[in-house]
Length: 133
Image (cartoon, rainbow, N blue to C red):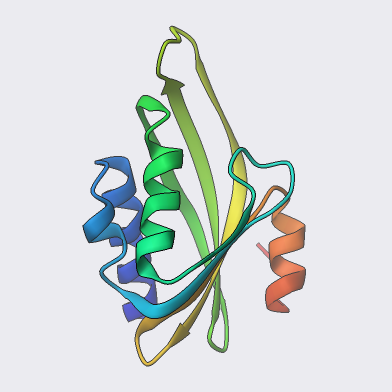
């Protein structure tokens, strides 16, 4: 899991610094991004350009903040990342955040799928992982 973990750490660090080109450098050209109903930019996005625009749209609402990986769990080619987001949105003085999970599928060292989940248990079920910690 070393290469996947390192690439995902780089991905979230790039999101935090608002560098979408760096965030998508390990994405497969045919990547699929799925953000579930109830999320601000829900939908399915395909290909690096569309996914990059989607990520930029979401990150563009932040005045400042972070989305920190807390834990990585692996099952075959799937990785679930527990996340803690803490952001101040543009035009706001208050901070908001929460804990959730993202799921990734890797092939040949590239991310071919990226999904977000509001509930960590849903991400674990998607990946067929049991978190015993």
